[in-house]
Length: 256
Image (cartoon, rainbow, N blue to C red; front, side, top):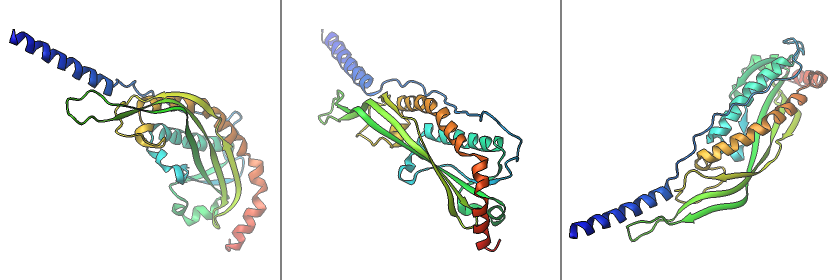
């Protein structure tokens, strides 16, 4: 009889332990593979614009640099940079770079380039409804730990900042901004259910959660063609040709 009761008690504890573990560790959906691709609609002969651009690598705005650690945004940044180079070549521009920073651009490239180009990505990721949920899983110890998961809707907006400058003087001569089409009411429920505390929306732990990653990836794919189409329209060789007198004047002040 005692043996039978022991088996029942052990079974109850095993069941409670299993239930606690299941509550804490929900099986995550696998991360999807996202690729971003854009082609300009009317390519022209290489070099036909007769304008040389020096490119600095695309970066995130300083105040949101933590997005650099988010897998989906680094993929977006990588493909955006590749497509931008292809777009500019297809529009007839000559390209130098890309350089990691302006300061890594060598003197000869500054002298021979007409315009230096920098691109800054500034996404805004905000919670709309819902938020962090707290719960206390079953534990045998007297001290019960509180854990968290996120469940609600979020919005993804932002802009892409484009800056052109005369390379020798580093004086800005061309500034544009592309608004990222708003994607609102993205449903997000984190796959990770055992955050030890709520985290900010730009925290890599949150952004790299499989469910958050997949939701953001789908949203960015919806935005990508529209973003690149606007960037495409801004890089008009005729506008850059109109900047030649200003470029020449700035270079002459440097003695070239």
